[in-house]
Length: 349
Image (cartoon, rainbow, N blue to C red; front, side):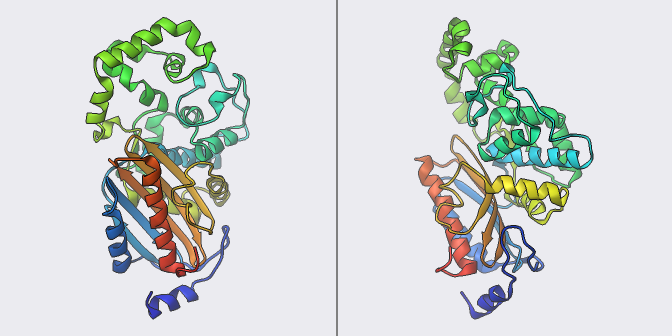
């Protein structure tokens, strides 16, 4: 680290946990960009990253405008819209929602493990959408904010050119069966969930249907088709660029994309993240508020690192990696450690 940079960092106000800090104008940092470019070249797939140190103003990106598969990071857009609707008195997050059998979704989350009839507040639903990436919670909230079209209209109004929610998680999980036969578009959410669970209340009444669908998918080599079309943006849950997701996350950190109270709640939730400990936070001792996302060949993490020198907004995406997911996650954590050392020094992580 140069003396100039060390002095600049030392002069930055040191405030954590949402306290005020001195903000500098965003300034491209060529040395940081070079470091990130070198690190991302070591990924087995393609990586993209955006970061902005809000204290020093240092900003860098690699493939910042490339389109990536959002996986679950697009859920941050749903959460922000929900809080904006509350700010506008159009949605009350204190209202309770009774979870039905038709709300259960496969993949990540905990609501599917509860009995039907659980009655959380909408705020609790958002919390699970963020900290356990709950897909049942996600589709509940997508419906509450007006559907994918409403999410995308909000993103467009905010000036985002790429950020886009393609579909609900139910539609995402139904895709292989749609590809096998168009008639499967009529599958109910309970039918789709039955293909992803061992709960007898869902599987037993559908045993013949489940067996037939699995045979149909295998016979038509649907999984192989899906692997071949993995780079088709229309098949992703959402589309993002590191630069635009970084802007959305920065709006949360600064309290500008919704009310300060709303953004403070979102940051509290992101600080409570229960997944992705091997990603950005892996080798860090400083607080991290983040949202993860992963699917086949994709591992992502976005959020804020509360470094000692000031908050760092980061949006980190990868696609097409090969090998173990844990190794790819470790790569994200390694780069995050280098970023913190760049600003705070090697003795402070």
